[in-house]
Image (cartoon, rainbow, N blue to C red; front, side, top):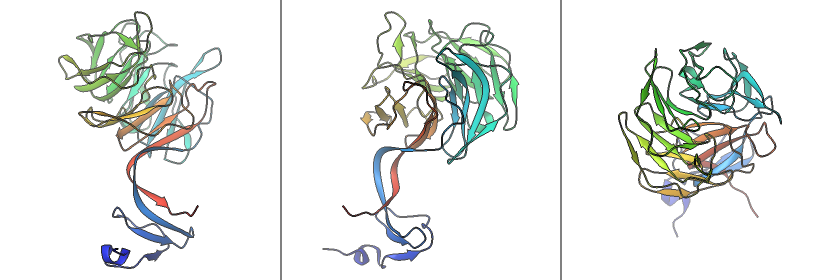
Length: 318
Protein backbone atom coordinates (compact mmCIF):
# COMPACT_ATOMS: atom_id res chain seq x y z
CA UNK A 1 0.00 0.00 0.00
CA UNK A 2 1.32 3.44 -0.93
CA UNK A 3 2.32 5.67 1.97
CA UNK A 4 1.71 9.40 2.29
CA UNK A 5 5.40 9.90 1.44
CA UNK A 6 5.00 7.78 -1.73
CA UNK A 7 2.09 9.94 -2.91
CA UNK A 8 3.28 13.42 -1.98
CA UNK A 9 7.05 12.95 -1.78
CA UNK A 10 7.22 14.47 1.69
CA UNK A 11 6.40 13.67 5.28
CA UNK A 12 3.45 15.21 7.13
CA UNK A 13 4.33 18.86 7.84
CA UNK A 14 4.20 20.44 11.29
CA UNK A 15 3.04 24.03 10.71
CA UNK A 16 1.81 26.93 12.84
CA UNK A 17 -1.09 27.75 10.49
CA UNK A 18 -3.02 25.93 7.79
CA UNK A 19 -1.11 26.09 4.47
CA UNK A 20 -2.49 27.70 1.30
CA UNK A 21 -2.92 26.57 -1.41
CA UNK A 22 -3.61 22.99 -0.41
CA UNK A 23 -3.78 19.88 -2.60
CA UNK A 24 -6.72 17.54 -2.11
CA UNK A 25 -5.55 14.63 0.06
CA UNK A 26 -2.75 16.66 1.68
CA UNK A 27 -2.28 16.10 5.44
CA UNK A 28 -0.59 18.41 7.95
CA UNK A 29 -0.37 19.04 11.69
CA UNK A 30 -1.35 22.52 12.94
CA UNK A 31 0.74 23.11 16.07
CA UNK A 32 -1.29 26.18 17.04
CA UNK A 33 -4.62 24.38 17.17
CA UNK A 34 -2.98 21.03 18.07
CA UNK A 35 -4.92 19.26 15.32
CA UNK A 36 -4.10 16.99 12.42
CA UNK A 37 -5.88 18.14 9.27
CA UNK A 38 -6.57 16.92 5.75
CA UNK A 39 -7.81 18.59 2.57
CA UNK A 40 -10.92 16.57 1.83
CA UNK A 41 -14.08 16.90 -0.26
CA UNK A 42 -17.75 17.31 0.52
CA UNK A 43 -20.77 17.24 -1.76
CA UNK A 44 -22.36 19.95 0.40
CA UNK A 45 -22.55 20.77 4.09
CA UNK A 46 -23.99 23.55 6.27
CA UNK A 47 -22.20 25.01 9.31
CA UNK A 48 -23.09 27.64 11.90
CA UNK A 49 -22.11 31.27 11.36
CA UNK A 50 -22.49 34.51 13.30
CA UNK A 51 -25.94 35.52 14.56
CA UNK A 52 -27.82 38.53 13.24
CA UNK A 53 -28.33 41.28 15.84
CA UNK A 54 -32.14 41.04 15.57
CA UNK A 55 -34.66 38.25 15.06
CA UNK A 56 -36.02 38.84 11.56
CA UNK A 57 -37.69 37.24 8.56
CA UNK A 58 -38.54 38.37 5.05
CA UNK A 59 -35.09 39.96 4.86
CA UNK A 60 -33.35 40.01 1.47
CA UNK A 61 -29.80 38.81 0.86
CA UNK A 62 -26.92 39.82 -1.37
CA UNK A 63 -23.15 39.32 -1.57
CA UNK A 64 -20.94 36.43 -0.47
CA UNK A 65 -20.04 34.60 2.74
CA UNK A 66 -17.10 36.96 3.29
CA UNK A 67 -19.02 40.09 2.21
CA UNK A 68 -22.69 39.41 2.80
CA UNK A 69 -25.76 41.60 3.15
CA UNK A 70 -29.00 41.17 5.11
CA UNK A 71 -31.43 43.85 3.97
CA UNK A 72 -34.63 45.05 5.68
CA UNK A 73 -37.26 42.46 6.70
CA UNK A 74 -39.97 42.13 9.29
CA UNK A 75 -40.18 41.42 12.99
CA UNK A 76 -43.21 39.89 14.49
CA UNK A 77 -45.39 37.88 15.01
CA UNK A 78 -47.35 40.86 13.68
CA UNK A 79 -45.08 42.24 10.93
CA UNK A 80 -43.22 45.42 11.78
CA UNK A 81 -41.23 46.34 8.69
CA UNK A 82 -37.69 47.68 9.09
CA UNK A 83 -35.22 49.61 6.95
CA UNK A 84 -32.17 48.35 8.84
CA UNK A 85 -29.40 46.51 7.00
CA UNK A 86 -26.42 44.46 8.23
CA UNK A 87 -23.20 43.30 6.57
CA UNK A 88 -21.34 40.04 7.15
CA UNK A 89 -17.58 39.44 7.11
CA UNK A 90 -17.71 35.66 7.32
CA UNK A 91 -17.67 35.71 11.12
CA UNK A 92 -20.04 38.37 12.45
CA UNK A 93 -22.74 40.83 11.39
CA UNK A 94 -22.39 44.61 11.72
CA UNK A 95 -24.92 47.40 11.31
CA UNK A 96 -24.85 49.16 7.93
CA UNK A 97 -26.63 52.23 6.49
CA UNK A 98 -30.43 51.98 6.53
CA UNK A 99 -32.55 51.96 3.41
CA UNK A 100 -34.58 55.08 2.56
CA UNK A 101 -37.72 52.95 3.13
CA UNK A 102 -38.70 49.73 4.90
CA UNK A 103 -39.81 46.45 3.34
CA UNK A 104 -40.27 42.75 3.93
CA UNK A 105 -40.76 39.80 1.56
CA UNK A 106 -39.14 41.58 -1.36
CA UNK A 107 -35.82 40.84 -3.01
CA UNK A 108 -32.19 41.85 -3.51
CA UNK A 109 -29.32 41.05 -5.82
CA UNK A 110 -25.70 41.87 -6.48
CA UNK A 111 -22.39 41.98 -4.63
CA UNK A 112 -22.40 43.79 -1.28
CA UNK A 113 -20.89 46.95 -2.82
CA UNK A 114 -23.29 47.19 -5.80
CA UNK A 115 -26.52 45.73 -4.45
CA UNK A 116 -30.09 46.53 -5.42
CA UNK A 117 -33.06 45.81 -3.14
CA UNK A 118 -36.71 46.52 -2.52
CA UNK A 119 -40.22 45.51 -3.46
CA UNK A 120 -42.21 43.48 -1.01
CA UNK A 121 -44.56 44.86 1.64
CA UNK A 122 -44.30 47.98 3.74
CA UNK A 123 -43.35 50.60 1.15
CA UNK A 124 -44.64 52.58 -1.81
CA UNK A 125 -45.56 50.31 -4.77
CA UNK A 126 -42.33 49.00 -6.25
CA UNK A 127 -39.95 51.10 -4.13
CA UNK A 128 -36.33 50.18 -4.90
CA UNK A 129 -32.86 51.39 -3.90
CA UNK A 130 -29.25 50.81 -4.94
CA UNK A 131 -26.12 50.61 -2.76
CA UNK A 132 -22.64 51.96 -3.63
CA UNK A 133 -20.69 50.43 -0.77
CA UNK A 134 -21.40 53.23 1.69
CA UNK A 135 -24.97 54.51 1.20
CA UNK A 136 -28.36 53.73 -0.33
CA UNK A 137 -30.04 55.78 -3.07
CA UNK A 138 -33.73 55.44 -3.90
CA UNK A 139 -34.36 54.65 -7.57
CA UNK A 140 -37.49 55.43 -9.55
CA UNK A 141 -40.17 53.00 -8.38
CA UNK A 142 -41.33 50.12 -10.53
CA UNK A 143 -44.72 51.78 -10.22
CA UNK A 144 -46.81 48.76 -9.33
CA UNK A 145 -47.14 46.26 -6.50
CA UNK A 146 -44.14 43.89 -6.52
CA UNK A 147 -44.85 41.85 -3.39
CA UNK A 148 -42.63 38.74 -3.38
CA UNK A 149 -40.73 39.82 -6.52
CA UNK A 150 -37.18 38.44 -6.73
CA UNK A 151 -34.26 40.06 -8.53
CA UNK A 152 -31.04 39.16 -10.34
CA UNK A 153 -28.14 41.34 -11.47
CA UNK A 154 -26.77 44.38 -9.61
CA UNK A 155 -27.22 48.12 -9.12
CA UNK A 156 -26.35 48.88 -12.78
CA UNK A 157 -28.41 46.19 -14.51
CA UNK A 158 -31.10 44.13 -12.83
CA UNK A 159 -34.10 41.98 -13.67
CA UNK A 160 -37.12 41.20 -11.50
CA UNK A 161 -40.05 38.82 -11.85
CA UNK A 162 -42.61 36.67 -9.98
CA UNK A 163 -44.42 39.31 -7.95
CA UNK A 164 -47.67 37.95 -6.53
CA UNK A 165 -50.12 37.43 -8.24
CA UNK A 166 -48.60 37.90 -11.71
CA UNK A 167 -45.57 36.74 -13.69
CA UNK A 168 -44.88 40.28 -14.90
CA UNK A 169 -41.20 41.12 -15.30
CA UNK A 170 -39.16 44.31 -15.22
CA UNK A 171 -35.69 45.39 -16.33
CA UNK A 172 -33.47 48.01 -14.64
CA UNK A 173 -30.80 49.74 -16.77
CA UNK A 174 -29.23 51.87 -14.06
CA UNK A 175 -31.65 54.76 -14.41
CA UNK A 176 -35.17 53.45 -15.10
CA UNK A 177 -37.45 50.41 -15.00
CA UNK A 178 -39.14 49.02 -18.12
CA UNK A 179 -41.54 46.13 -18.64
CA UNK A 180 -40.24 42.82 -20.02
CA UNK A 181 -42.11 39.73 -21.23
CA UNK A 182 -43.95 37.86 -18.49
CA UNK A 183 -42.78 34.42 -17.37
CA UNK A 184 -44.73 31.38 -18.65
CA UNK A 185 -46.06 30.42 -15.19
CA UNK A 186 -47.03 32.80 -12.39
CA UNK A 187 -45.51 31.61 -9.10
CA UNK A 188 -44.63 33.40 -5.88
CA UNK A 189 -42.18 32.82 -3.02
CA UNK A 190 -39.61 31.79 -5.61
CA UNK A 191 -35.82 32.01 -5.59
CA UNK A 192 -33.72 33.61 -8.32
CA UNK A 193 -30.13 33.28 -9.53
CA UNK A 194 -28.11 34.82 -12.34
CA UNK A 195 -27.73 38.19 -14.04
CA UNK A 196 -30.11 40.66 -15.66
CA UNK A 197 -29.92 38.83 -19.01
CA UNK A 198 -29.32 35.24 -17.85
CA UNK A 199 -31.57 34.37 -14.91
CA UNK A 200 -33.44 31.42 -13.43
CA UNK A 201 -36.54 31.60 -11.20
CA UNK A 202 -37.07 28.47 -9.16
CA UNK A 203 -39.78 26.71 -7.21
CA UNK A 204 -42.31 28.69 -5.25
CA UNK A 205 -46.06 28.26 -4.99
CA UNK A 206 -48.58 28.45 -7.81
CA UNK A 207 -50.78 31.53 -7.76
CA UNK A 208 -53.72 29.36 -8.73
CA UNK A 209 -54.29 27.01 -5.80
CA UNK A 210 -51.12 27.78 -3.84
CA UNK A 211 -49.60 24.33 -4.38
CA UNK A 212 -45.83 23.73 -4.23
CA UNK A 213 -44.15 24.32 -7.60
CA UNK A 214 -41.10 22.59 -9.12
CA UNK A 215 -40.81 25.15 -11.92
CA UNK A 216 -37.39 26.07 -13.35
CA UNK A 217 -38.01 29.13 -15.54
CA UNK A 218 -35.09 30.68 -17.43
CA UNK A 219 -34.73 34.22 -18.82
CA UNK A 220 -32.11 35.00 -21.52
CA UNK A 221 -32.56 38.75 -21.75
CA UNK A 222 -35.36 38.64 -24.32
CA UNK A 223 -37.44 35.49 -23.82
CA UNK A 224 -38.32 32.67 -21.41
CA UNK A 225 -37.68 28.91 -21.57
CA UNK A 226 -38.17 26.10 -19.05
CA UNK A 227 -35.45 23.90 -17.57
CA UNK A 228 -35.36 20.59 -15.73
CA UNK A 229 -37.78 20.83 -12.82
CA UNK A 230 -36.54 21.20 -9.27
CA UNK A 231 -36.61 17.79 -7.48
CA UNK A 232 -38.44 19.23 -4.45
CA UNK A 233 -41.27 21.71 -4.86
CA UNK A 234 -42.02 24.35 -2.28
CA UNK A 235 -41.78 28.08 -1.72
CA UNK A 236 -38.48 29.11 -0.19
CA UNK A 237 -38.64 32.89 -0.43
CA UNK A 238 -35.33 33.60 -2.11
CA UNK A 239 -33.01 31.20 -0.31
CA UNK A 240 -30.49 30.47 -3.05
CA UNK A 241 -27.01 31.47 -4.26
CA UNK A 242 -28.40 34.48 -6.12
CA UNK A 243 -25.02 35.74 -7.38
CA UNK A 244 -24.36 32.40 -9.03
CA UNK A 245 -24.51 31.68 -12.77
CA UNK A 246 -27.59 29.80 -13.96
CA UNK A 247 -25.37 26.76 -14.67
CA UNK A 248 -23.84 26.40 -11.19
CA UNK A 249 -25.81 27.20 -8.04
CA UNK A 250 -27.31 25.84 -4.83
CA UNK A 251 -30.96 26.22 -3.87
CA UNK A 252 -32.78 25.63 -0.60
CA UNK A 253 -35.62 23.73 -2.25
CA UNK A 254 -37.72 23.67 0.92
CA UNK A 255 -37.00 24.45 4.55
CA UNK A 256 -34.54 21.58 4.94
CA UNK A 257 -33.49 20.24 1.53
CA UNK A 258 -30.55 21.75 -0.35
CA UNK A 259 -30.06 20.92 -4.02
CA UNK A 260 -27.30 21.83 -6.47
CA UNK A 261 -27.70 22.46 -10.22
CA UNK A 262 -24.64 21.82 -12.45
CA UNK A 263 -26.10 23.01 -15.72
CA UNK A 264 -27.65 19.67 -16.69
CA UNK A 265 -28.90 17.86 -13.57
CA UNK A 266 -29.89 18.28 -9.92
CA UNK A 267 -28.15 16.71 -6.92
CA UNK A 268 -29.55 16.65 -3.38
CA UNK A 269 -26.87 17.55 -0.81
CA UNK A 270 -26.61 18.42 2.90
CA UNK A 271 -29.49 19.76 4.96
CA UNK A 272 -29.46 22.79 7.24
CA UNK A 273 -29.50 22.21 10.99
CA UNK A 274 -32.16 24.93 11.30
CA UNK A 275 -34.21 24.86 8.12
CA UNK A 276 -36.05 28.06 7.26
CA UNK A 277 -37.59 30.10 4.46
CA UNK A 278 -37.97 33.82 3.65
CA UNK A 279 -34.43 34.56 4.82
CA UNK A 280 -31.49 36.59 3.49
CA UNK A 281 -29.39 34.33 1.27
CA UNK A 282 -26.71 34.61 -1.37
CA UNK A 283 -23.56 33.03 -2.79
CA UNK A 284 -21.38 33.10 -5.90
CA UNK A 285 -21.86 29.50 -7.13
CA UNK A 286 -22.65 25.99 -5.93
CA UNK A 287 -19.60 25.87 -3.62
CA UNK A 288 -20.48 28.54 -1.07
CA UNK A 289 -23.16 30.81 0.33
CA UNK A 290 -25.14 31.77 3.41
CA UNK A 291 -28.67 31.95 4.78
CA UNK A 292 -29.43 34.34 7.68
CA UNK A 293 -32.61 34.97 9.65
CA UNK A 294 -35.93 33.79 8.26
CA UNK A 295 -38.91 31.79 9.42
CA UNK A 296 -38.17 28.42 11.08
CA UNK A 297 -40.73 28.99 12.84
CA UNK A 298 -40.36 31.05 14.93
CA UNK A 299 -38.22 33.74 13.34
CA UNK A 300 -34.49 33.50 14.01
CA UNK A 301 -31.14 35.29 14.14
CA UNK A 302 -29.25 32.19 13.00
CA UNK A 303 -26.81 32.23 10.11
CA UNK A 304 -25.66 29.07 8.38
CA UNK A 305 -22.92 28.85 5.75
CA UNK A 306 -22.93 26.39 2.86
CA UNK A 307 -19.79 24.88 1.36
CA UNK A 308 -19.12 22.11 -1.14
CA UNK A 309 -16.07 20.84 -3.02
CA UNK A 310 -12.62 20.83 -1.43
CA UNK A 311 -12.66 21.57 2.30
CA UNK A 312 -10.18 21.43 5.17
CA UNK A 313 -11.21 18.84 7.75
CA UNK A 314 -9.83 18.01 11.19
CA UNK A 315 -8.76 14.38 11.63
CA UNK A 316 -10.37 12.77 14.67
CA UNK A 317 -10.58 9.31 16.22
CA UNK A 318 -13.78 7.56 17.19
